[in-house]
Length: 346
Image (cartoon, rainbow, N blue to C red; front, top):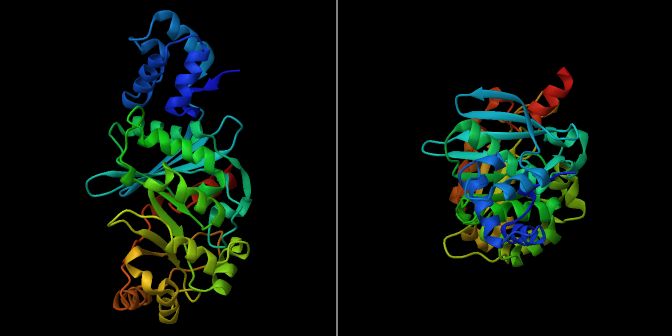
């Protein structure tokens, strides 16, 4: 059975090539063809000997995902891929003013259980492999025909619950031997699992990328109602880890806060959030995301005046806060929505 070449980080692939009888630099040549040049046919890797190309084609494949649907809107494109074992995976390309951002998935489903997220409806089916994560980037870039500058791990799943595969994917994204993206252009978003967050803080690869934490409530009680994982990862302990998290100058942790009508969107909630952050306001910024309605979920988007009042309260309290309206509502842009719709139609 063939392996996927994109499952291997650069050093791992060099060792693999040595096991196959090739010099390590042949791995670097193959990496350049796949990641820099976007070539997905071993026979076209012309600086490799012909017999090496044949042997690699016998041993490896490059694309574990198959594109099954693509839905376009003015500000976003949602791709629906199918894995070899028949699962559906979402990827969203966001069109920014002067660049593209790709939102990738790290799991099929999710076991965090956030009550406002369509991905949580099926629970966790399995982790995505490194190859399946990286292939989202490779296939969308090929379809787009242009470079993609930013990558955010904010699609389906909890990235830190699939730590090793996500770490290897990040390594491939930032390595000069692979995709060569800037570390400052990669963001890993987590719902706040404390143990892997502590691991991430000491990881030479992972601690250099941007960190975003899905907070969504300023108190343990309210957050636990929205995000059951908080029972095992209490908010006070999470905030202690974040306040001690190592950051280089001028970098901040992003607190993602989905505003849900009459649930967590009051001025009092904003004041509680200020109290939670305390004296560490310069270490954080808040992205306020008005809830993206989904027919499968019982929540509503708050009116604009409540969103603005929440933001104003944070700014006046010294905490940077930005309103981020979800892109791609026309393509079911929130996590799991197109996948859920496709499953209903199948």
